[in-house]
Image (cartoon, rainbow, N blue to C red; front, side, top):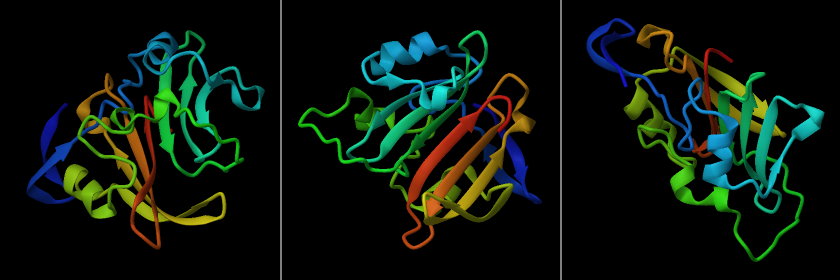
Length: 176
């Protein structure tokens, strides 16, 4: 990971880019690596979109979504708790729900505070209100183009506006 001086006019601040989400590296890892990590059981192709794969827990509304290119190279990884709960609950917990999978390379986790996001990555390049599945959110958008073209270029973090807790993280190569 690259560290570069100068965040938004503050020459003493350090910029930190992110290269890893859910143990996967967008732009480097393939679907085969994700299937080995999360198992092939439970993987779906949502909305007849052959360039995306998901591991979904319909009981909790949690899922991991991968966007792929034509060669099955991962272009983006999204971790979210903003899925629609369908009530299909089972006693067995899905392999991909293990907490070791729900973290960035810098240690950001779903459920962390918005303050933790800023402590890890600095002030976002842009931020503002957002909405998903009827929930009011705050969007934090980070661009990592300064770190070079061989690393993921952007990260979006969605936090619940009422609690300030991280609800969704997307890391994308080369861009969203």
